Image 1 (cartoon, rainbow, N blue to C red):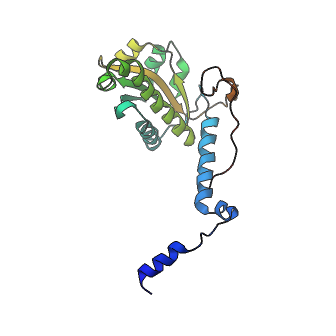
Image 2 (cartoon, rainbow, N blue to C red; image 1 turned 90 degrees about the vertical axis):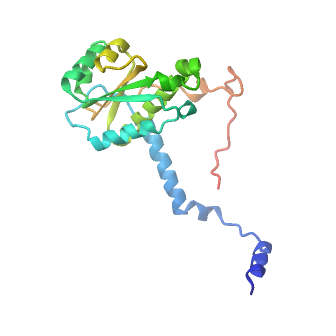
Image 3 (cartoon, one colour; image 1 turned 90 degrees about the horizontal axis):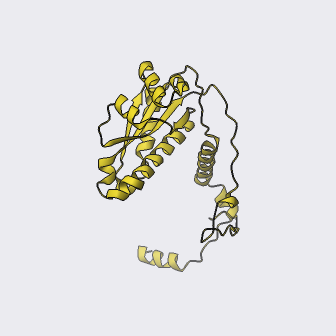
Length: 223
């Protein structure tokens, strides 16, 4: 039978309904659900750690963490971030002093200075790039790296309290490079408790600010 005839027969054939139970057991769908659960667990389980043991972080794991930051979104894809890796003990001590004497930082195998390249941040969006987009892009890169570290079993801390001038001088940053955050990475020597979290209904608004009556959505799987 010619192919065109077979094709016409196929088009006129009755649509076959596949039972939902069969679709639920498709391996690809199970794998996706497992990945979703793992990702959400990593996000929920991440804690700020300020006590680290002596185990080092491998270069391979460090590169995976840095690469995760590289894939963060940024306005106009300007990718304004710069990463400075600190491993030496003397330099970590200086950085800790620049963070207003947070000497626990010296325990971390790796300190990462995350900066904004203001030339890139302002090249397309000028003032708004400087005031907003540069901060958004760097923050997205930082969160990616914190989550990636947690997925590797590596704990972290995000420090915002530091002298920008002192950090700039210590790391020899030019004028157009602005230090935005100090990150610590290592293996935890403590288990911080789960901090209290507000309920979504306390700060999620529907359509306009102040309307906290969130419409309940049907909790159904879509196939």
